[in-house]
Image (cartoon, rainbow, N blue to C red):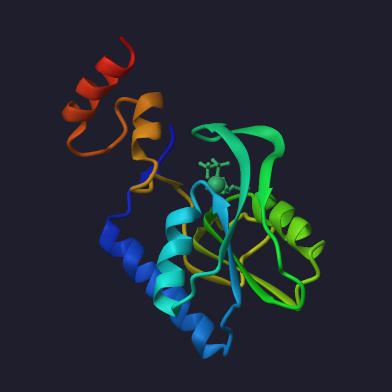
Length: 176
Ligand code: PRP
Ligand code: MG
């Protein structure tokens, strides 16, 4: 059975500040942030906010078909990136699980000739083949983020999420 971990917003905010503090202690301030769609968008915005950076690019990539179920490889859907030449780039995602998504995005970004590439995630799984340069916690459970909890509930109505009834009402209307 899948074991879930359900971080609250407060923990996400604490995790973001922890990651940003590690970067600043390391004297690393990026010129550009590359957010990995879709789960990395909110962490990227929170890091950008803390650093006072507005320059955010995006890579749309999808690996997971459902809870603990993957495609053979991450599928790159679109790359919304430009002007990275000689720039310090920070790639941001919510979690590194196998590490394949970070790997694939790192390979794409390398082609744009930045001066430096680093990566950050909020969480990392202990078995990830690639650890981001900056992360908050190592966790071995399936993480239900505030930004994808309804996706999990659609797959498993028993997922440990509060206040599901209102969402079930919405879902019934959506599926009519
Ligand atoms: C999830 C997560 C990371 C990636 C991590 O994204 O947001 O991007 O998987 O897994 P990996 O380390 O094994 O590659 P997903 O593919 O589910 O797309 P999403 O962000 O749009 O939900
Ligand atoms: Mg993702």
